[in-house]
Amino acid sequence: MASRFRLQGQVFNPQNLHDLLGSPTSRVAYDMFLRGVRVQNKARRLVRVDTGRLRSSIHVSQYQSHQRTVTRVGSNVIYAPFVGTIYNKRYWRGYLIEALKDAKY
Image (cartoon, rainbow, N blue to C red):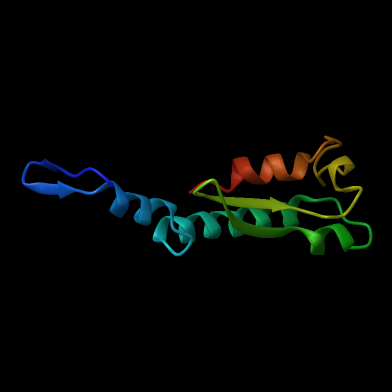
């Protein structure tokens, strides 16, 4: 049973906080997904392109793990970790790292 206590006249219920932050349908999870889409779009712009297969395979997925919402951006193409960006020859998912840095709000 969850404990409840008062903060300046407000009742704090840990279950409500968990529902707010940990639920896959919460606004926090939705915001995480939108940030993932932003990283995905930036990575698609940064990745070096020959045929377009890698660019089109970059995707966003969201799932629950140990009562936490996890948002993952990646690719299932086997050579994805070895491709650099269009701006430099940085390897090992350089385009995802740069996209994560650049896609902040």
